[in-house]
Structures are given as C-alpha cells and as structure tokens.
Length: 564
Image 1 (cartoon, rainbow, N blue to C red):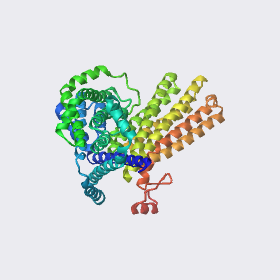
Image 2 (cartoon, rainbow, N blue to C red; image 1 turned 180 degrees about the vertical axis):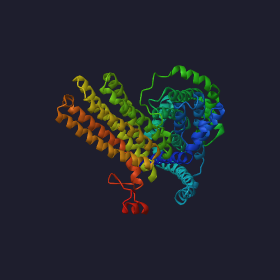
Image 3 (cartoon, rainbow, N blue to C red; image 1 turned 30 degrees about the vertical axis):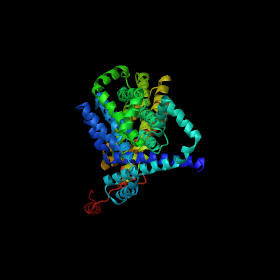
Image 4 (cartoon, rainbow, N blue to C red; image 1 turned 60 degrees about the horizontal axis):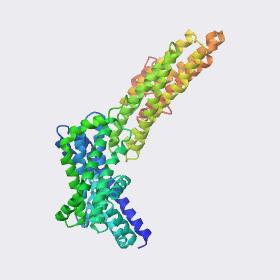
C-alpha cells in the first residue's frame, strides 16, 4: 500500500474516532444532561460522594472535560465549595477510563449488531430519550470501527525502518514521550479518543508497552489542560478547581514516571495482552490519584485559595448566566440567554432613563456615568450574540429556532438603543452645554414628556419580552402610533415658536429636532419586541394592528346610531 494511502486511511480512522466520541458525549448529555447537573449540584455532603458522582457522570459522557465544565458552572455561581469540585474532578478522571476498559476487549464482532440496534432506536422511536440512547450506541460502534481502521492502516507501517527508529527514540526518552502524549491529547481535545488509539496500537504490536504507558501519562496531563483552555479568563474560583485538577495529574505523572519499572512489572503479571495492560494502567493511575488526594481536597482547596486570590471588582458587563454546558440542552440554554438579555435590558433602561438629566445641571458628570454603562452593554451584546450563534449550530426545533432568532434581534435592538444614547443624545447634551444654550419652557416640556413616554415604552417592552403577552404587545405597538403623533405635534409646535420669533427656540432648533429624531429611533427599536409575538398570533399585518372584528351586537348598535 502506498505511503499516502496509509496516511489517509489512518487519518480517516482518527477523524471517525473523534466524531464517534463526540456522538457518545452529545447523546448522553442530551438525554441525561439536566439529571447530571442536578446530581453534581447535590454532592457537597462528603468528598467520597462527590468523587462517586464524578465517576458516574464522566463514565456516561465519556469526557472528563465535559464534567469539568459542569463543575465549573456550579463553582462560578458559588453553588459548590472548591473541595467538592476537586473531589468530583478526581472521580471524573476515573469515570472517563471505563470506555477504554470496555473497548480494550476483543468485541469487534458486536459492531454490526450494535449499529443495527442504534439505528433502529434512533430512527423508529418517537421518544427523545430512546433516540439519544440510539445515538450513543451508534457512537460506540463507530469508535470500535474506527479503531479497527487505524490498526489495519498501520499494519504496513510496522515494517518501515524509519518508523521503527522514531518509535525506538521515543521509547528511550520518557520525557519526550510524555510531552508528545500531552500535545496529541490537546490536538485531539479528547483524552479518551487518544488513549483508545494508543491502546489499539499497543495491542497490534505497533508500539511497545513502555512507550504506550508514557503516552498515556502525557494524555492525562493534556486532558487537564483542555478545560483550562475552554475556560480561559474565568473567575478565580473556576481557575482554582481546574488548576487543582491539573496539579493532581502532574504530581501523579511524576510519581508514575519514577516508579515506571515497578509498574511495568506489575502490569505484565496482571495481563499478557498489551492492550489490556495499557487500559489497566490508565484506570489504576486515576484510581491511585483519587486515593492519594481525596482525603486532602479540603487542604488543597485552602492552598489554592491562597495561591489564586480573588481578583478585584469584576469588570462590568461580564455575563453571569451563559453556561456553555447547556448548549446541548437548547431549552435551558435559551432560558439562560434570556436571563442575560434581562441584565442587558436593565442597563439600557438605566441609560435611557438617565439621559434626559444630562441636559440639565451637572450634565457633564452624568454623561460620564452613562458613557461608562455603554461598555457593559457592548460586552454583554457580544457575549449573548456569540452564545446564541453557537446554540444555533445545534439541531433545534422550529420553536427553539424562532426563540433564538427573536433573542438575537431583541439583543441587537437593545445595543442599537445604547449606541443612540451614547453616540448621539449624549453628544447633543455636550454640544448644548458647550454653546450655553437653553430650551424654551414649552420646548423642554415637550421633550421631557416625550422622553417619559418612551421610558414607559421601554419598561413595557421588557415585560412583553419576559411574558410574551399578546395584549401587552398590542398595547406597545398602539402606543408607538400615539407617540408618533406626539412627535409630529412637538415638531409642529416647535416650528410655530420659530414663526413667533421665540429666541430660545431659534437657538436650539437643530438640537430640538435631533433629540426628537433620536427618541423616535429609540422607540422604533423598543417596539420591535412586539412584532414577532403579534405576527405569530396573526394579530398584525404590514406593521399595523388589525382592527378586531365587531360583534353582531356592536354592528347592530352602530347601524342604529348608538355607540358600539
């Protein structure tokens, strides 16, 4: 077989292995994700209970990184102490070894049966739970199939002198083998997939057991780095549990490297099959870590709190509810994003309410405070938009797709309102004070009244967003038409004062009309939240409310000249 064909077949097998591992994790999280979250949330009673919970969750999702992200979500919200989080992670490291154990046995003859079983479960059942279990079974089958592909493709490489020399050099350098294992695990972003690959290569005689053991040690280090990369820039509490887990692994790898000759001798006595030796070593390594560090979790937690102190005040606008672990549960992810949109709308409402004060006394100080609020608005808008974009990559129902799209639209409109306030209204206030201008009493009253009505519109829009109430949505759109008339009347009144020669109106005419224009634009963005609700119910047509049909009694009264 040609060299490029061998390489392509191996690469195809590795890609299938990574995809199958993802299938298993996704299927389990979609089927049982919320139960896992509840389980992790109630494990603070003892380190042993926390460890056992970590074993169960990671064994099901086959990813200690996914379990780490679940733990992180609780640590971040102060729902779990650090010591419990460390204990869960020790258990998760054990749980993720179980699929390696199961697939290290010679069960390739079960692949056709499992594929059929998974296919029929996924395609013929109407139950979401059964469908996801079918997905998991198909994923496990593909994992076994991919490992066979890799072993078959690598068979011709065993005779290559160059490849043999590379393996010999790696086998003679334990440190480089560990580093390579860590790097490859980071590239794979799945320690399970990489260790399954090592196990298969060792079982086929492609690599020697000492080299395979060193690569497994490196894989355990690499898997500790994966959640750290996924939680970059996280709060101190999150970093403590992730760095603590990585520290456990580093100490364990150091000890295993020192005692590697004795470990190799023990493995040889336990198993004759190289694949089983590597699977056993991976499991025993993580069990030994748990036995060593589980009694010390509270002390390690105290030490980590000293080494990684709390930062100062958190930056404003940091999202509080956008949990990546929920992306495989669209309904929960949408709920979390909605809560974050509420935070954003609260900040924008404050900006809108306070902006009118920048045209009065102490306007400069008030402008600075409002400008500071635009930073968290932009930050939250970006975070929510990216979160919802990632959510839309998941398979969504029609209803969840519609909700996600509406959230993005509402979030974008809130950000536009913030920009109008920051880049236009505040600039108008600054210009007015630089030029020492003053509105006429009547002109200022019109602006203030219009502003107050739009603030009320903002509050109503937030309520409509939270409740989806059609009656309130209709009221919001109806009020928009009334405000449009009020804006027109305010402009006409202003032009009337210009004709009368009112000096204050003449001096501020551009400012007056620009403020009315900006308030009108803000009102348009506010009202947009109502349209999807009214369109879904058929209550709106071409951006205008339909007139409700009159009853027979009302028609009769109108015909008789009496009020309906």
